[in-house]
Amino acid sequence: MMINTSRFGEMEVDDNRVITFEKGLLGFPKYRHYVLIEAGQDSFFWWLQSIELPELAFVVTDPSLFVPTYRVPLREEQMRDMGMESVDDAQVFVIVNKRDNVLTGNLQGPLVINVSQRTGEQLVLSDRRFTTRVPLIEIGSNLQKAASA
Image (cartoon, rainbow, N blue to C red; front, top):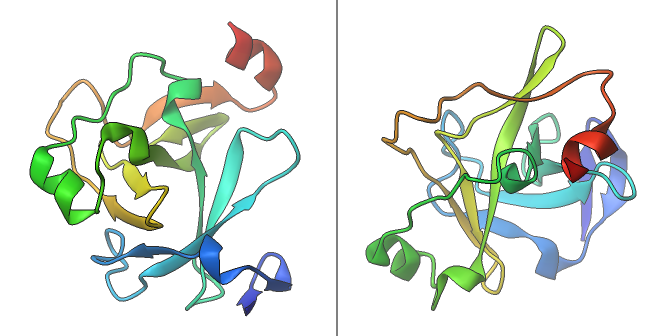
């Protein structure tokens, strides 16, 4: 299918790459269909691009690359709602923001994607150890060093 994006123009994506967030994302409940676009070869970041609104895209990353102790506690009913048979079906991403010279991740509102069903949900965690602006990396620092440390 062809989609329009404000960042990449018109692009073709396979239908099987579409991820459906039945409840939408926080603040954007009516936009439910997205695709992941790699930000660059061997990148730690992706764009989560809405296929319904060209201007709506989020930079996301796998939080375990930056916070190795981070775990999302999935309840049985959440797994069932997303059609997951086990936690191995889940891929976790967090939305990334830039604050001054630092990229931060919303570890309190992770995106959990069922990789086999291509469905997802944004959770809101009550764990106070993680906030909506956890520093991931300082801009200008060497990403390779940070990821391999």
